[in-house]
Image (cartoon, rainbow, N blue to C red; front, side, top):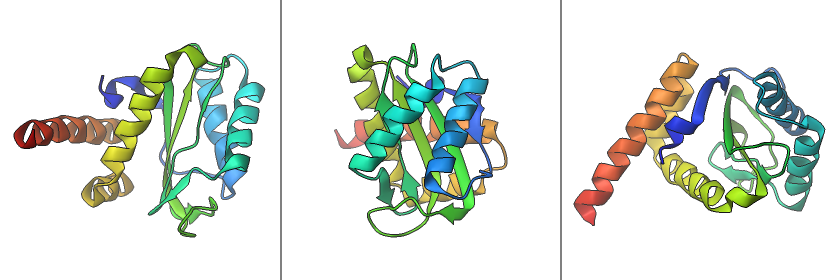
Length: 161
């Protein structure tokens, strides 16, 4: 499974309008709703909000990965958003967030959900990949960067394994 195959251009926000954490989450969920990916956007917002209250998904180094499992979606969906200015996401390192991946999955898809979450985290460990996402000009380029990085990462794993 490649993350790039799960991503859609209409679920990518190249420049967030919102500047506050919960408004950013709402903006991303609105995008999922507009794309027809969510049956119940209020339920999705509530589940992700509850998750954020437990512990921030701002994992540091300018990255946040809000995620939840809910029956509001039929399949795993991944949205991406970027903020050049940075969002106060209450990140563990206190730094503003520039790159946000949102994962929403139905409860039965736990394996796929956890695999996607792990793959995103692995890609975002690479400084060059993060810088490329910041510099990308459009949604198509974001998906291409993810695809190239996944394929390249697989080759590197094969060489070292």
